[in-house]
Length: 234
Image 1 (cartoon, one colour):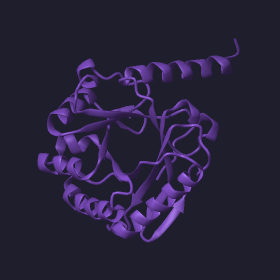
Image 2: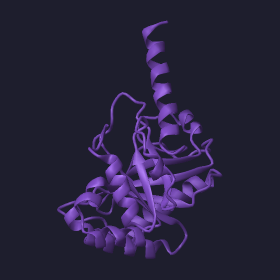
Image 3: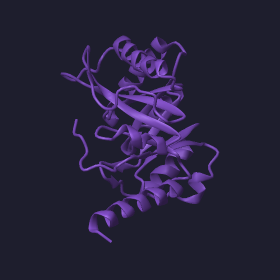
Image 4: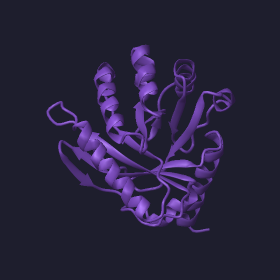
């Protein structure tokens, strides 16, 4: 069998195994550089839409279209300028606009997600922004955010709990770039013991412990679709 064919079979096997290992998840982040046709393999696609930088929006990723997927979660990355994040009003305006664009193509959008690697020492400030963003959304869309494993291992417990109380979903990423964080299973267990609800982000090949998958606290598990030549840097 040609080498190229073997490579694609290996990638497909890793994805299939990872989907089963990650608590049977059929949700995934779809970042830049992915062809629109590949979204169909997911039930829920978290689709990167671009960056909010100050009062500007830099559109990237897949443009809204009639995607063959049950639910779309538009993802917007927040970028700080001179240490300041965009205003809540602008973030909510961008999120509503993108969500509406997907809806105009007949797609179900219940949630919008903000992607921001807030420093662990500044979780309180980030939480304040999220309160304002959620107020601006006014119940039209659920608010989801991504989170770092370091928030769970090094952050103040009160800050971690507060973030989970504010956002409708906090997806703690158990990986850093293309590698699982050390002791990711312990991070998952600690999170499940802290938060009233929890969601996890994984790489396709990561295997979560059975007790994590069975936890009544655990909501969605989202896999990061890595089938591409490179990861876009931000």
